[in-house]
Length: 120
Image (cartoon, rainbow, N blue to C red; front, side, top):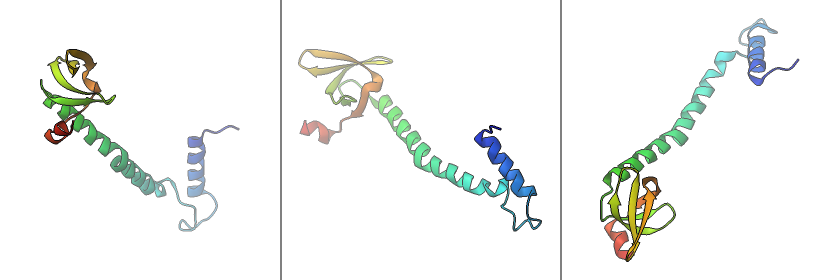
């Protein structure tokens, strides 16, 4: 007989509830005994993985909204440039004198601050 892991888990949980010992405290426990650890694991996943990723996404959205012509930016490929033109999903960057390159807006990784602009 071939059981899926979930069916086997439910079968073992039912066996622990009804089979073997007559004293409930001596039995292996049931499905509800596993609920608190599972909720704890879900909470840990949320605070370690999901919440920081949401925060990062909000920062990226705010960065894109604050982008304007003349800003010094760095692309995800490491190119430092100045914003020449903005369109809805496209941005034109000046990377050298007379050299303009079109990028997708998602390629912008960071807007350089005044301190970073001076070191360039």
